[in-house]
Amino acid sequence: MSFLFGSRSSKTFKPKKNIPEGSHQYELLKHAEATLGSGNLRQAVMLPEGEDLNEWIAVNTVDFFNQINMLYGTITEFCTEISCAVMSAGPRYEYHWADGTNIKKPIKCSAPKYIDYLMTWVQDQLDDETLFPSKIGVPFPKNFLSVAKTILKRLFRVYAHIYHQHFDSVMQLQEEAHLNTSFKHFIFFIQEFNLIDRRELAPLQDLIEKLGSKDR
Image (cartoon, rainbow, N blue to C red; front, side, top):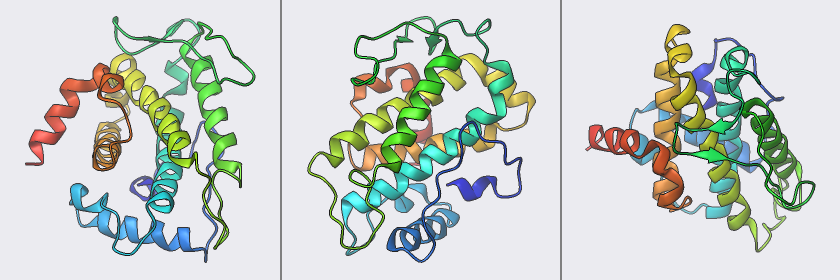
């Protein structure tokens, strides 16, 4: 969770998305942080007894956005139009951006541009009260799960780009433990609720298997 980065540099790529204190979602976030602190990530991602699945996915999606925001924020100086002229995850995977609204036809762009589009788009979804209601008693829309799956699928691409193109910089900055813990948490969460198609995970499949086997 983002509390892992507590006292570290607070540099983020986009403004942090806060969950309002005193709300039920804030309590859920605190519960997640407490269970995460126990060190058992498999257990930490499970739906707490009696809680709503959509709300649990919403709280964690916001938190993963904040984590990736912070992780990418630490390496933005290394991810440039020149060093990363295309958004890729190794030589076999390249991503083109489309959001279905402003950009309907996928466009090829640099990694910093793609990630800017992506994080801005995610931010817009998280700020939309009709999609991510923060008030008690306001129901989640029928399409919530498919929106959350698209958000998580796209956030995965930022992890994939960082691991494939910038892991040396991450190690230089001594941030690899944070990156690995964050990614492991993300993977265990999406596996627990089957939120990303296995084919989408292919760029980091070896790492995913390694993280999973370490936990058995």
